[in-house]
Image (cartoon, rainbow over all chains, first blue to last red; front, side, top):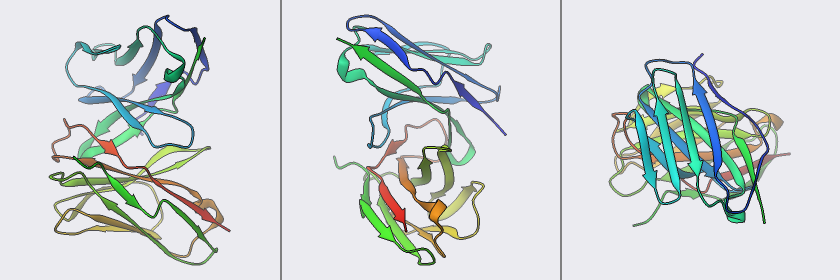
Length: 110
Length: 114
């Protein structure tokens, strides 16, 4: 069973700080990686999609992928209270199957 | 551009009944995947359809089934409902079947079995 591991948190950061979320995966052959944000009672919202080693930036979000070490991270700069949510890391397998981690709860305190 | 549309948003069913959920993907997307989300198990993959063919199936009993139509809309059916089937059911839409593609979720259908 391919696994995706995340620290469940909660991760608490002050407003304006950088939040760092981490994820490791077990299948060395995995190619595509996703970060979703999910507010309570809502569906997951795609934040970042990355498949190449290195960094990918989109606004305040940066995804970092290291296939050799089998980890992917998400940095949120200038964290805002509205960023408080559960962040889900996912790896895509054959047939567009997403395998999710349990999610990390992020709390941004104003 | 419209997003992924799931209907209905909420359902209450009685144990033993069956239910059908619908998912309309983003226009042009050909892959639809279904997931079950519960507090205890998180997000679990049910199955995926691409061009009307089921390509992948998760570890769920045969009571869970699905299909995809020629316009890429997909339906999911659960027969003989059990209390444990209460969950948020989500579908995800992707453009291609290649794997290196973004997957967008609909708003979900919250099913309550009583």
